Image 1 (tube, rainbow, N blue to C red):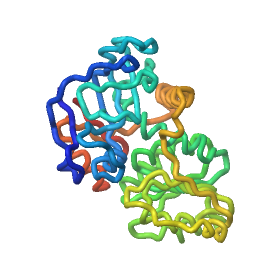
Image 2 (cartoon, helix red, strand yellow; image 1 turned 90 degrees about the vertical axis):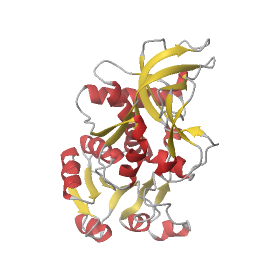
Image 3 (cartoon, rainbow, N blue to C red; image 1 turned 180 degrees about the horizontal axis):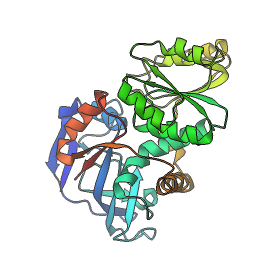
Image 4 (cartoon, rainbow, N blue to C red; image 1 turned 120 degrees about the vertical axis):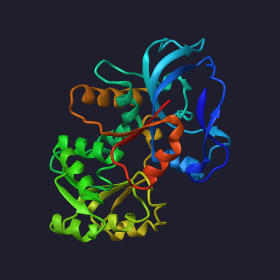
Length: 322
């Protein structure tokens, strides 16, 4: 089968198309014929070596497809069933072996591409909005990269709850998408200072929560726009790692809360995984959550998908199709 393998960490050129054997399921695994694989910033971190994985490895954390074989101990899924997964390495491939307890079944009304597009970014948006800082009607949230993959989903979830959403974007095109998703206010971080603009928009009171996937270039100012006892949810670092912080600064700025959450910790149990998948698939089927699958690439051009993602040229979701 064809797969995208990393033999040496580095830039997009590190993504190599290789021919390797189709995996055979261990007793607790199912092998899935991949219909679509999601492209995410965590893949970039793995490719660069920022998050270390033993070399060589097949990259990719998310996908959807049809079960082609099951291990001897597997009872939860059967061959022929449509399934999706996230946080399982090896997804940029024609086939992938997945622990059966990490698979969720795709219901009617949701396509395989939609399922692949929502597992990582959608579940991230879900835990941020419903668990990390449980949003409620009347809250105000600042969402960085509001037209990005997680951003567009998070804006929709927050808007549907009744939250006032302030979104930061770089272009008019991205502003239009964020507004359509439900953003109430837009800040163009390319030619405005988001700190002063956020303070102006909130009358100096600050926001209840900042959702930050950018990191290095936004982190310190993000703390400055929080209300007393507000929360910074730093869930990514697309501009680089956030600077180190002396915890006393959180006290000085109003007894703030700071968290660096990870999806793995919010879907660690089978119940949590199924709950989030069920909620998201239900919203998609009911047309209450719109997915923007902007680019679909053949598996062999994974390098270009990574260049587009890192170049901030994309909005919504990127998929690879074997």
